Length: 69
Image (cartoon, rainbow, N blue to C red; front, side, top):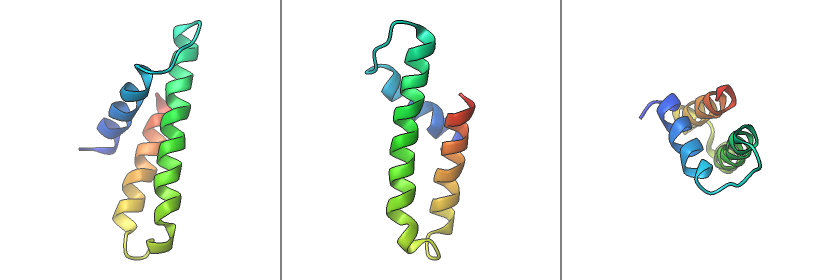
């Protein structure tokens, strides 16, 4: 799965569960939830960054794709 596909997958998963008065607010809430998750994943792996550079790069790209949504 590409970073763009993963970003959309995470966003869509959260979009179904967040509530808001407008679609724009719901989009922003889903985006923020997705970013929280990706930041947690990235931060949990920083200790092993040298061994997991591809892992870090992948999740960093996912984060950038979420921001673009």
